[in-house]
Length: 225
Image (cartoon, rainbow, N blue to C red):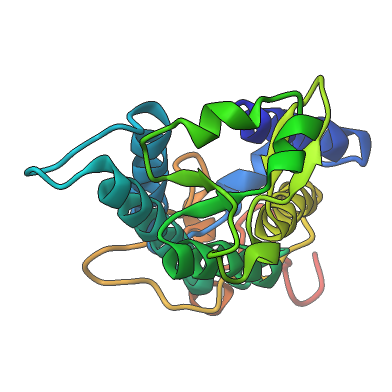
C-alpha cells in the first residue's frame, strides 16, 4: 500500500541528487488528467473496500471489474501523455496487468511469492473477495500475475507489469526534475484544456509553437547606441 508513495519519495530524492528541481513540474502540460484521477480513485476503492458489492453484484465480480477499469483509465491517460519520459514502458506495464486481470477474473498470486514477501498464502486462500486470488492450474498467462515476492521490510508481491510501471515512474520523475523531457505535441484543448502549471509564467502555459518569447530572455536586435 505504501510502496508507491515510497517510490515517489525515492525518485524525488534521487532527482535532487542528480541536480533536478521539483519546480520543473510547473511547466509540465498534462493531457486528460481527469483519467488519472479516475483511475487512482478506483484503485483506492478496490484497496480500501475489497468486499464492496454494488446492486447485489458480488464482490468477486465488482473487485476485478473495478481493478480492470482502473488499469484501463490509467493506460488511456498514459497513451495520451506518452511523450513523457518512460511513458511507453508504463503503458506496457499497465496493459500487461490489464490483460492478466481480464483473462482470469482477477489478479492471480503465486503462493511462494506470498511466502517470500513474509505473508501467509492461507489468508488469500480463505478470502472471499475477487480482486486477487491464489494462483491455480486454471489461471492463464500466470507468468504475468503477481509472481515476484519482495522480502521484508518492503514485503510486497509484484507482477512483471508492476515492475515495468514502477520502474518507469521513478525514471519519469527523475527525468522531469532534471528538465529532460519532450514538449507536449498536442495543441491546447478548447473545452477541457490540459493542466499547464498553476504557477508557471503565462508564456509557458502553451506549446512552444504558440508561445511568445520570454520577455526576460528577449534579445534586442541591432546596435545599441
